Structures are given as C-alpha cells and as structure tokens.
Length: 327
Image (cartoon, rainbow, N blue to C red; front, side):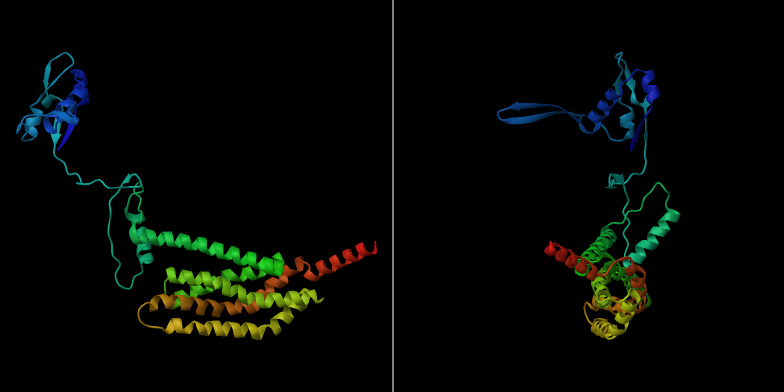
C-alpha cells in the first residue's frame, strides 16, 4: 500500500508534512517518544494506536491531522492510498539497484562463450540506462583474464631483462622478443583448430610458452653475435648461424613438442586441463619453428646493423688500457 501526498493541498490547508508523517507513524507502527532510566534499566516509552484501530486503508484515510491553526483536517482530503506491486527485497550492486539473473551453461558450451552471447544480446534488448554486470563464476572469469594479461606482461618483461643481461645488447634481445608474439598467436591458432578454449589452463601454458620460444631464439642469436665478434659481417654471421644452428634448434623443438604428446593423448580425470596445456606447447612450438628459422634471421639482419659487435667494446677498452700503461 502506497500513500501519495497531495503537497499542494497540504500547503493550502497549512498542514505540516512532519505532523502528517508523525500521525501515520503513531497509528501504523508506533513512535518511540523517550527512554526512562531507573535502577540501571532503560525503559522505552512508545506512543502507538490502540489494538485493532487500523484494520485497512479506509481506517488510515479516516484519521485526522491538526493544521498549524489548530484545525482538524481529515487525511482523506490530503492523501490517496493506492495498491501497487513492489519487490519484497531491493537488491543493490555497486550502490545501484539490481536484479539478479541466474544462468547455467549447457553441456558443450564454455562459460566465456555464454557470457559473450549474453552480453551481445543485452546490448540489443536492454536499454542503455541499464548495465549488465557479471557476477559469480563469470566475474571470476573476467578477473582471471585480467590477471593473465598482467602475468603475460610480467613474463615478457622478465624474459627481456634476462636477455639484455645475457647478451649485453638491446638489439639482440629485441630480435628474440619479436618472435614471441608470433609464437603466442600460433598457440592460440592451435587451440582454435583443435576445438579447445582459451581457459585458465591454456593461459598458464601460454605464459610457459614465452620462455620456450625465447630459448630457441637464443640458440640462433647467440651464435650470430659470436660470429660478429670474430669479425664477420651481419649477413654472414646470421647465415652461418642459421645453417650451423639448424640441427640443435630442430632437435630442441622436436624433443619439446614430442614431450607434449602425453598431455594431449592422456585420458581420465583432469585430462581436459592437461590437453589444453599440451596443445599450447605442441601447436605453439611446432608453428613457431617456422618463425624461429626464417623470420629471426630477417629481423636480425634488419636490426643488428644498428649495433656494434661486443668485441668492439672490448678492443676499445684494451686500447685505452694500453695507452694508459704507456703513459
């Protein structure tokens, strides 16, 4: 039951809204007037209507309220009582009124696909003033994806810093890190063609794949830098490295890729998690071999010419030490 107040009528009859509200509270629920304290006890004094005085809406509108001039005004001339449907509970989310919709995915449909479809449907049906916010497992899925992106960025940064410290060259580190995005794309493509989803387990495999991809590039770039230190040109150094390091790189790739086969062929409880990691390693490294053997030399040839061999710094230091000794 909702009581709608005619505020213009209230002002015309010079009735205070506080007086009206006080009357309704006393008759419906009672008003706590004061507390009496005595003998270490607090006794509340409540002003309320007698028993069974209010039996329905008609009893409310038959009440009288006193105006500021002292006149008694019937509530029937000031308010209107209407019956309307209201929820038994007003739920709020992020300080906004909300309505919860529970859903359960059918067998064979992953949670991310269901969330994406529901979000796309909400954009078409739900007004722009209403927002769709995922909760429960859908919210945790979004949080895990954000955490995964942070993990990817941290893994790339750590690998890059380790490469810079190892090679003592920013150019060689950039050559190796340039291959990493192609390897991650190859792993995602392998998941797509095999019907696997980009779940938490496959995301863990992608983080692991960053280090494996960098390892193969190290075998090639390190040998090319050694050839440059020996006096070879950039082109000759990378061609020698591609020819001589082909066998070690191929052996490393084959052994790592074959090591992922038991994960793919496994069965039983937890096989889906192992299969996701296995396909990331198997497909990612398998397809990355093309980028390692063909794209890395091209990138090295394009970038290495802007840096000097490490031997130049050593020779310059030796010359400066020799000059200082002569003095």
